[in-house]
Amino acid sequence: MGRKHKINSLFLKFKGTVLTFFFLFFITILPTYAHDDHGKMIEASNPYPDISVNITEDASSNYQLDFKLKNFKLIVEGQSISTDINSGHIFLFINNKKEIMIDKVDFLLNKDLLKKGKNELFIMLMDQNHYLYTKGGRIIYVSKRIYIK
Image (cartoon, rainbow, N blue to C red; front, side):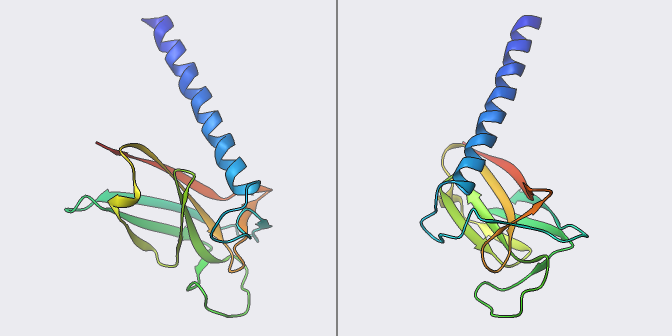
């Protein structure tokens, strides 16, 4: 049982590394169909922004995403204002396919956007020009999984 556990543990680490590689490949190399600027990066300013999310399932099996932001100002999509540092919107990337721009700290994710089984959510911060914020050259993001039966 110990050997089997080690093999499973190594497989899970390898799988996580591969998923991270594909995620970074899709957002930095391949252009997206919605906005060609996605994937370009901009260094955030100190104090650096941070994002976390709490996900809960509601009565209709949709998912409520409640974002917690530090040192980041949300701007309504399409609003033309002078560029503030560490400001913009939240970029939700679902299963390396679906892209959603969010400009509120709470968002209802429709279950129809998810597939059966494991769903990967990558949540990043973007400026109003759709550049991904980085800290030390690394994208500021949080990832979550939702499993659908």
